[in-house]
Length: 238
Ligand SMILES: Nc1nc2c(ncn2[C@@H]2O[C@H](COP(=O)(O)OP(=O)(O)OP(=O)(O)O)[C@@H](O)[C@H]2O)c(=O)[nH]1
Ligand SMILES: [Mg+2]
Image (cartoon, rainbow, N blue to C red):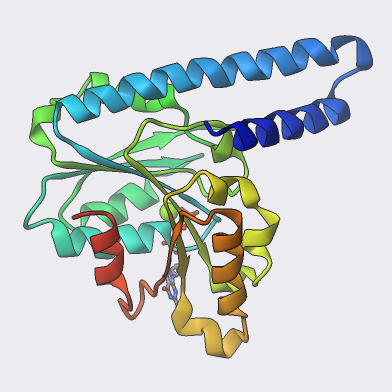
């Protein structure tokens, strides 16, 4: 993790701990959080090594609730399933709605129900890839629980992280959730078919993502009209 990002994470954890913990146990709370994060990073590294060893391309899809993560995965799977054997791991607190939807589009799916947890962690992925015949897959997508905050604490060990928001969340959504954009390779701004009707300032959203992370590739899309779907697939190298 880059130095500045590490400092940001530490600062946020300190602030959280100030709110949550009594003075006398605050240091312990911070220590515990850092340890959990460190252990998660070790496991994520192991996941990535395992996936690489099997020549699997892997992507972690995070983003706002209802931004269109599943809808975009449905479209992407439709386009590429004749060329790649795809496994999609879907994280949700309950139900297998997303897995059922994606299964209709040429991919095998596994649903993880996290219960009260607001994000997948590297151990969830470790458990799945340890129990799968990885030679059967070319591409693995992981759709995280819809949330723009918690997944920033847990990397999973994929090649690329893609953060998805949509114009329906308003033009401030990227500015207000900097962490995920700082640590992502691609930012997708979905539902651009609705931009005119909502009056959302799409250009501001694009510029905000670039300001937060000059290296990020920003792709405005519509899962409904398929606008820029090809650009997204190319950005994934598929
Ligand atoms: N107009 C429009 N609607 C969309 C688009 N993408 C998704 N939707 C709709 O938005 C709603 C939510 O889409 P999902 O794909 O379930 O979103 P999600 O991010 O997977 O949601 P969670 O997994 O619950 O966080 C559905 O009703 C979709 O049909 C889009 O590009 N344009
Ligand atoms: Mg979904």
